[in-house]
Image (cartoon, rainbow, N blue to C red):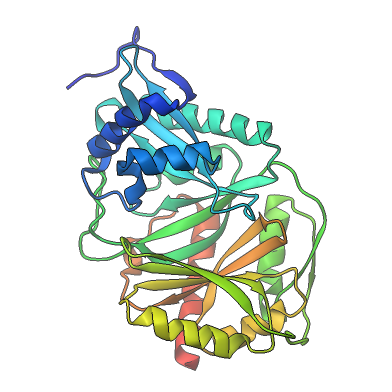
Length: 337
């Protein structure tokens, strides 16, 4: 086992295309073959993502070129302007040297260079370490995705729960912002106001009974490796529930564990749409500020498998408050249904 000494300082830098094989080696040392995003094992897929500027990677590497850490900003498409900050991993042989913190600082610098409004990240809840790293950069909790990751994922050297899917605590880091008007049901307004104040985001939070008009348009992405699907609503139409129900029929035969649905909450019909979606089993997942070119989104979730919520570890009180809110909404909506 190679370990870092005081004279061995890795370089924190952006990933170059010729280093992709070394990155794949790092993924395997950290996760074996269990990493949920299979693209991280495929040099060609990684090259395509980087070339198309959908992934901006930061690495920690030794003088011999060995990559011992990685994190990235990842965009899900041209519409996405607050990307996911994820894919954080540190070689088990080199943990305890603040590599994650150093790479995260470089990632923030890249986000600033790209003039992003901010970015979000999903922190694992089998331990609090990655949450604490985000908290140190003044990121704030905005939601919880219950049972998002399969129990087959194994983080080498860390506590794992093989009997339940793992939940992810969502954080947002603000870089730039402007005043937005958003529409959500009145019963959720106070919760969102607390989140906005904590993040220092200016939001005019309104409720409206206006329903959608025209035809609902959306796109869906299925991640079969972790048994999840994400529906993203582009336009809230009058046929929203029938359109979503038709899509659910197609997705449920795939034996998914969770389905996520993004609502563009800067459309006035979003407040009523949220209430209608609760009637078919969707509930609060996370607020996604500045998520797309159309503004803020709200990611709802619908759960199909049992999850042991006692394994969800939060690093601080704010995370516990989010956990309580989301779990209470899950129970409320399930009982209604």
